[in-house]
Image (tube, rainbow, N blue to C red; front, side, top):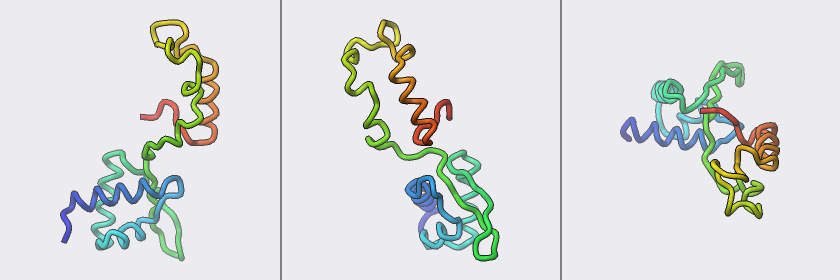
Length: 125
């Protein structure tokens, strides 16, 4: 039988890989080969640690929880269209000089656009 920390790590990875659609708690423990009791305890522990979010959901006439990651895994796709990558001022851009990221209109517009489409959460910790 796998150790509990191994199951927690596998559970977190599985939930993170489901992305914005999340996964039913029952599907999670089945995928891990754990009991429903173990799956429930792991889900609660991950939620208490602030790693996932649980939302109650009615599925096939039974109440369960859908699990969502609090943070998505980083990928190059998340910054592929960032204006900084092709900016001519990039070599000189610094928080203590002009130009700076704090006063860049293109960067601000890009971040606002990303926050509206849900791919970036500004100010989330």
